[in-house]
Amino acid sequence: MIRAILFDAGNTLIRMDYAAIAAELARHGIAVTPETLQRAEWSTRVRIDTELFAPDAVFSTESRDTTERYTRYLLEEAGVGDAALSATMVAWRRAYNPPVGLWTVAEPEAAAALALARGAGLATGVVSNSNGSIRRILASLGLTRHLDFVLDSHEEGVEKPDPRFFEIALARAGVTPDEAAYIGDLYSVDVVGARRAGLRAVLMDPGGCWGTRDCPSAPTVLDAVRLLLPGGEAPSKRS
Image 1 (tube, rainbow, N blue to C red):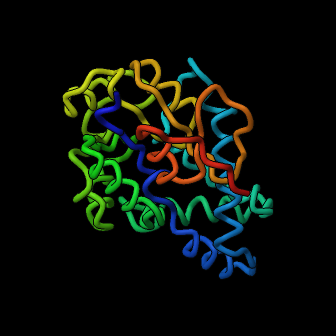
Image 2 (image 1 turned 90 degrees about the vertical axis):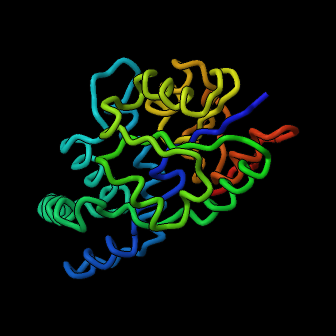
């Protein structure tokens, strides 16, 4: 019986401002739509998970190297392969809107997903690798009103996939591992991490890019919550 649903933040409840990235690329003479960048991100997360975040690898999702690779991979997946421009965009992103950066847009179904979980009588919380800014971001988007707590790796001193981070969340929610589920967008960080702490996990896969995995997946966070509620069924994937 699920008594709590825990959520990742980036690419689960919030997304990057793809319009801002597209506008900066346009300043350099490159026409890429926000929609193209969003689709490119779906494959980027699989690529970076495979190359950097394999189980048992030593990494940090918040390191400068990870952020730079993520930005380069995103541009490459969007068809922008020029190395000089990529370096320019990496520097632009590093200086853009600190400390929040580009993570300023709510996923369209985030509020509905959180409200559905709370309406079902479940505890809700965020467990996010972040730089100390995730609570501020969620509050600015009106999402904290649907949350019982927000845990930021910078504040807690531990990062996913370390099971200790999930154990902190379980204690805050007042539930045992078998009473909780986690929803996130990276297999090796979110699914593997949650399972190490004894939680079940749902993988975000809006573009059907992850292929066959040993866990349920969902195209939106609202679909993921519905999947976890009693009687939930696996949603059809979207392209």
